[in-house]
Length: 80
Image (tube, rainbow, N blue to C red):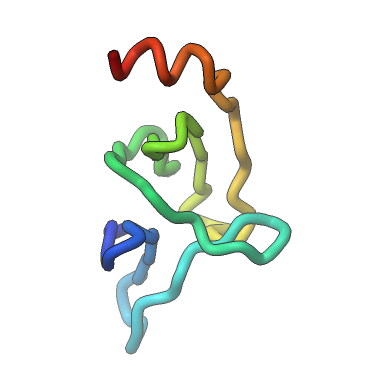
């Protein structure tokens, strides 16, 4: 799993893949503005600068689930 590009999108490649694949949400929108990733129990968890936490199953990386969104008021307060 990698964070790449200006919009900090996510991409993955498994052993034997010839190319990287962009990770998308279930509605087809690329995951972007990712600031950090961790791997736990064969799943990747990411935190975006928009206050979103995402989970990506390594076995089905095109089924990204949005776990939670931090309210904008709280996000603004944390940045102050």
